[in-house]
Amino acid sequence: MDRRSRMSLALLVSPVGAHPASWLHPESNNAPPTDLGFYQRVAETAERGRFDLFFIADTPAARTDNLHAWSRFPMFMNVLEPVTLLTALAGVTRRIGLGGTVSTSFTEPYNVARQFASLDHLSGGRAAWNVVTSANDYAARNFGHAKLAPHALRYERAGEFVDVVRELWDSWEDDAFVQDRSTGLYFDPAKQHPLHHKGKFFELDGALNVARSPQGHPVIIQAGASDTGQDLAARTAEVVFSSNADVAGARDFYQSLKGRMAQYGRQPEELQVLAGLPVIIGRTDEEAEEKYQALQEMVHPDVGRFRLGSDLELDLSDLPLDEPIPIERIPANANFHKAFFDSIVKMIREEKPTLRELYLRYERGRKTIKGSPARIADVMEAWFTAGAADGFMMQFHVMPGGLEEFVALVIPELQRRGLVREEYEGATLREHLGLARPANVHARVAE
Image 1 (cartoon, one colour):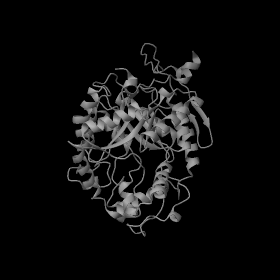
Image 2 (cartoon, rainbow, N blue to C red):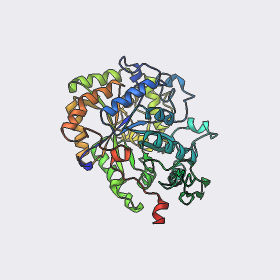
Image 3 (cartoon, one colour):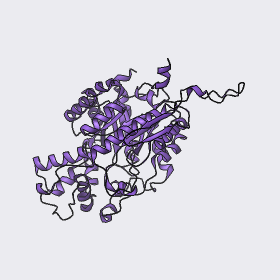
Image 4 (cartoon, rainbow, N blue to C red):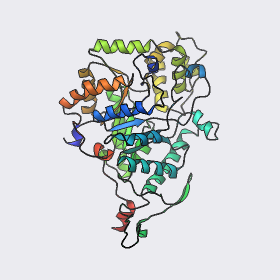
């Protein structure tokens, strides 16, 4: 099948599901989120569905205040460190890509370069790094800062961070480690290329102590939707997660992002845009709607207020549930998730919903698609053929059942339409996504 004719699929993995009340659902995973067996089963199911990527989001922090709300919505409160988990999964999977989040705000380039190069080796070329700048002060306080640095400064640091990591991944040419017993030569000294970097944020003089990995560079993922985030993605990313609520907005984002790539000497096909797609599947559209409403009824008001307030960067605990949020209470701008902040403010200004109505409608980007397998496939095909996405970051409100339904019911329908693969054609994540393996910059110079 021609690569450009089919969509890419990634799975955003949650221990219980993507919905804020999913952990209360009787069919959601009830094992501890530290149970490796659960993740193994999920990864094997996604691989059976021929997904491109198994993806773990992360933040390096537990919530330490407002615990009355967080105790009812335990997001990131008991989770495994992503690279450790993905390394464990490398041994029980064979083809699916393994991606995880590591923040550029709270680590060093050498650590990240070494971790993901190692994961790429251990998985046979299936590693991907999700570049984030972090978006909460809980993480900042764990690393000696009272608050996150301003948005623009975090992205400036991230840009230099990614550049350094990529240069470290080119510390060695592909054939540097000859291990020639006849000559007694373990590696060719001429094929090591130490990095001598002194920038605004990082100073480094050395080389990575692991051979160049199977993909050359592990795949780089980003999700920034702001102008600053799009510029960084256009320059450095190979996969971008988008969170637009409709086809028109998604197509505008897609065109804006890919349109920026030329100024960095890149072609549009060097980057895949995957739209976030939360779904609930039923035998009929009506059954799927009933499933969704049952989950919505489980959302505690403390959770609703707090989720909304987190993205508005505003304490809503004193406001009545059945009145609109006063416009004058809203901050002038955002420092955390600008795209989510802007979407909430737009709803408040244009529609004037009550606080309760707003938290029950707000979904941090894409609206949940509810329906039969054919309807889910219709929506995915419509977005894909409209040029709104190269594929999808799938989210399921109840795990693992939502994924199992999708693989059993929707994947065969997408395969029948020729929109997804029936078998893996390649071995590496780059091959799955149709991304070229980058040549070592030093080898190109030598030629």
